[in-house]
Length: 150
Image (cartoon, rainbow, N blue to C red; front, side, top):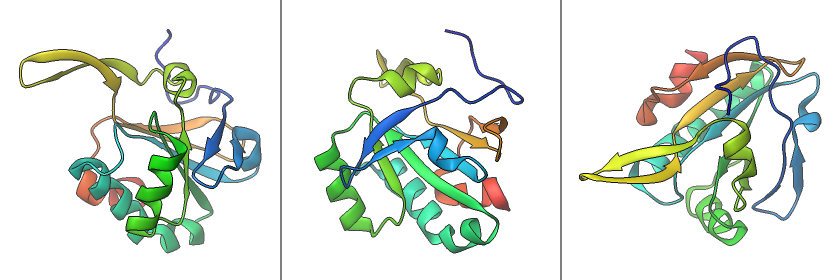
């Protein structure tokens, strides 16, 4: 799997969000997209990240951005997470791991001395033409909105 870089065309994707709606990269032609990958609904870091993006959502919209989150959790898990934290953006359930693999964010992780496979927290900022203009690999979960739009 080739590691994506800024200037690359964003891999096409299609997935089901928390409302059962199909979300595709093509839906965002002509718009800027923040596509963020996170490990798991309702964990402390992922909640902080989602809430940072939620709190900055009006600023994102004002600057022409849309936000989509992706994890390997189920649609039902995303529904609960969205309702609990009033998240205003789509969360794609990538249970077959196709999108995380296409974006190169499914990888080896270490926690408490154990090695396992999981989603590596990464954010891709994609321009109006579908080109990756920024990749954030060192995500500050509490201030993620600020990392993207200052």
